[in-house]
Image (tube, rainbow, N blue to C red; front, side, top):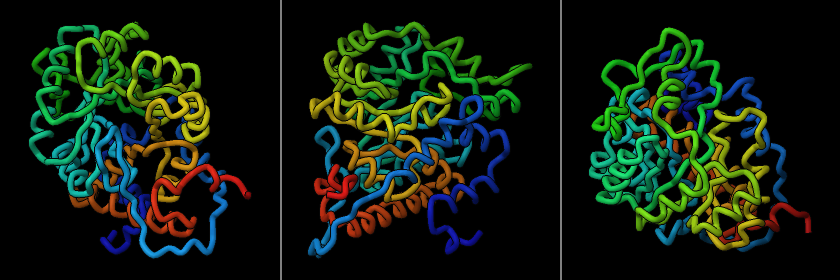
Length: 361
């Protein structure tokens, strides 16, 4: 496929599928069990109509906003996704550079193939760090200290994966990290290897061995007690959980079902978003991920109460196609589509994208 034919995110997905090995493609693309939630994350956006405004006197538009007080050029952030070097040899370094060039925040995964220090050194862009709490609390604490020593300005605690969801594609492929790749952030703690198993997924074995399934609300309190960085909670789909997270000091909530990779038939995130946003009531910032493939999806998420969206798989498609340039191009597509969608909705700024676009008043 030529560069000119890559005009939207789906084009990048198709081209990435042509280039990636089957086990890697299935790992990036797959969901849990029958992949109902995986499909619904996307389909739910298509069911939401936008009641656009007209005669809005649109001369210029600004996509800029802030997240946790940091200015970003648009309300699109790079979601935490694992194992970028399976897509391209430059891995997370390429992603970080592209995100910095785009003026947006990248959330680095605990399960990155590159040390957090090297990622932070690769670019000057804003960074947050996604955290799993390991059974080895000393290793978890050491990782947090390393994160604090970099430019990372927030920690995003994932709470929807105490156990790894049943990902049947990975089980059939006996998924493991390719030779030479590891979970670099935990390698020094002896927890960096995802090996091939005789049966099933090596990642399932890794998570079952090292990640703590017994995490509770007390662990949010523990995490806040050992770091001065703001802590966001990722993986909430219920209003009561959102309220409790705020009461315990969460500085942000990410409405997420782990890209449809954990509990199948859990709700599409865009459908759960308004319940969480209403429960929070502006006391903290709310973000959403899952199924976002168009700039118009970003408009719908903002209208339902999100401060910004987090985009995961499309970044991996861009990385697989052309490394840093591929990621940059995917982000450019989101920017151009968002700008046009806002204009057609009669919105000059992100602040003007609100719930009125969802009602035919």
